[in-house]
Length: 586
Image (cartoon, rainbow, N blue to C red; front, side):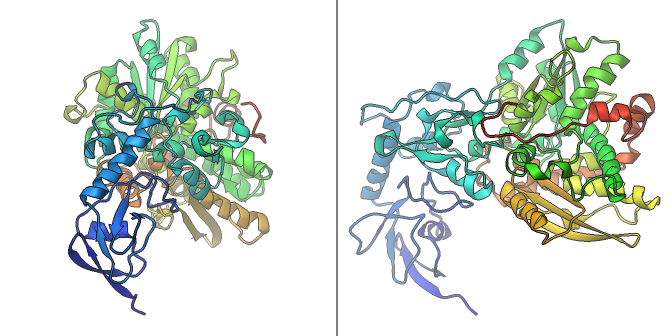
């Protein structure tokens, strides 16, 4: 059935659009981008900021373009002198209750409120008055909350509830005193926050930020007695170029390695190496469970935000979670054990820095199960993609003109399976490339499992492995994880292996990735697909595409770990989980 069409006029230009088209979307069809703050295409409508107001003939009040549909015969003006002045007044009022610290703010030059003030000609503050003061919640391991910079757009509340299904944040108070807070106005680390950082991604100002580790990394680099080692997660190479105006979808692996060396890192290892190692341990664990030695379905354990969600919301399913540490924690552990022993280095002199797309990795590194026996962490600091990009710019490095460097041995060689860890479905596909061959004892008849590749949120499939049917599922974003887990709990679905990622699109959409370049939105499927394509291209271009065929992985088992699932592998590469109440401790 053909959709009903309506005739509208926008700024004197006649247009035919489908009934139900928002005024904001219709305006873009005639080349007009109406300004917005609270609006986000992946979130519900709020209409709170009123920056997107337009005039509609016959109406006595301005209309929010984000929350009103086009109706037959509408005559809309988006840029009359009155509208421009009204928008400017709204922006000035928002600035009135905003700190005067743009030049020292982390979002300076990349702030939506700042950009609107510039584009609308706000050159002075005309409305001075009392500001609502709020204490900064900076005690969290991952997420800092600064309500002094909040503009009440509600994006953080909606992404937490609608995309992640955590509902940790809500608007507290009324009128002048309204602010965003976890329940009981507690600290983020005392709440049900799972540290995913999506609130940081969607915030248009700097009301939410990651806990900054750059100063301590600078200090470590400056210490001549410290061996500073970086490890680079797969999704970093798929996104960091965006911070330097490189096209989305460009793989900047070599440039990232070179930049880290220029910053002063002594060694640069590849987290893809330990992703291969994760597959070896995870595939072994999965096969054991298929043979009756463990609980099914097995749930992947690479995403720390997902692990936090499991411990807080689904503790009864902890036995289903793989005991494998994440690739970051595996590599850091081996750097201070295997590598330190091999090179005769005191582990206390090694400073491990994870370059990660995920702010929850800052929380993961602080978990006590990821500490050495002397009560020092395996991972000493975590830099998000944004933090590393800032350090590169601070150092004056022209990222776009760098030569392509190579990772250091012995933990710098990785298969294509390790690369695709950074996108949703990648962990599943990498695991299947190894597990299928281990189950059958023969080379697999295929290497690409495209049925698990998706950024839309949820995938299910059944594989025939030598006559044995294996049911698998892939979920990214915790709303989708909840759907899968509830089906399992109710007995509606029987799965054998489930990949779960906290962030939409997986690590490529992590809470520490660059703010979207011009033309894209946060959580934009087009941007996530471009980042994913970069990782799949790396995988396709490699001759080595299976974790168990990686010679560096084979050697580390021969020299140190013995075999997948050995006692030493379990001691160093596996972990445990526990139920955590919202007010619990790490």
